[in-house]
Length: 320
Ligand SMILES: Nc1ncnc2c1ncn2[C@@H]1O[C@H](COP(=O)(O)OP(=O)(O)OP(=O)(O)O)[C@@H](O)[C@H]1O
Image (cartoon, rainbow, N blue to C red; front, side, top):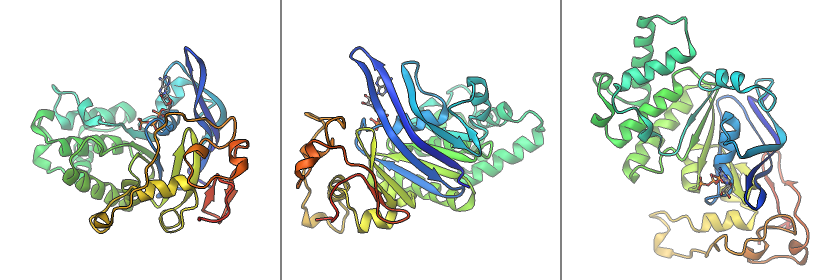
């Protein structure tokens, strides 16, 4: 049985112009000890999925449809009080630029201790100290920095501390939303290595959210490519990188430069969201597609499963 099963999740936001769908009929599963990455351009709904999993959607958001099942419990149906109990203990989130959220006047070790005691009441001071040392060791912060204040930490160390806080109560699922975006590339590389090490050591499920397909591919064995609220392709890292089917996935991969391929630049232009048509009348990507079919402008493509792990929302049968 999967650790997390999300079925047909649809989330809308109330706005001055009515209800807009930010997440549209999204389904996926995650097993313990595995990682799933969501990738797509800004505004495609990645953070909304993370917030729905955490029960932290803003007041103007509404779950219009779907189920979120974690360990047999349907999170759509539970009260905010029960959700508070689950957050931190069963599901933890590393937010975008979370390192700036550390309390500047509280020692970092005390902030991690607070995380532990909020969710576990029957834990002794000695057990807390041992746990903090273990966590700092796990995320690569030297033990003699436990009593420092946040301003004494570099950006990378602050982000490591945030990861330690997320791990503090041994959650079953961690959602990391752009956890390295605010860091320079060298530190980003170190933190990604740390996350991969932690994933290999723990039995935790990981949801990793990023606009950067290269980052997602490093960390996750399965990838969901999103566009305008919908998953347009999902597969293992190998399936998505070696046999991408959706034109949008191929555009994303084409715009990914490495030192190996940057001398041979052939970056396709990914059109902006301007003029975007939505999914109501055909495929939202039809105006951006390099080779659309007639029906793409009229009909919304359904989901096609290509292998047990690889699926796509596109009418076209071949990758050409
Ligand atoms: N509180 C809100 N009220 C109204 N609309 C919102 C709200 N939050 C997000 N949206 C809209 O929902 C859509 C999805 O936003 P979301 O933040 O989930 O996307 P994202 O892919 O995570 O983008 P980013 O990478 O920029 O965070 C966008 O069109 C966004 O404008």
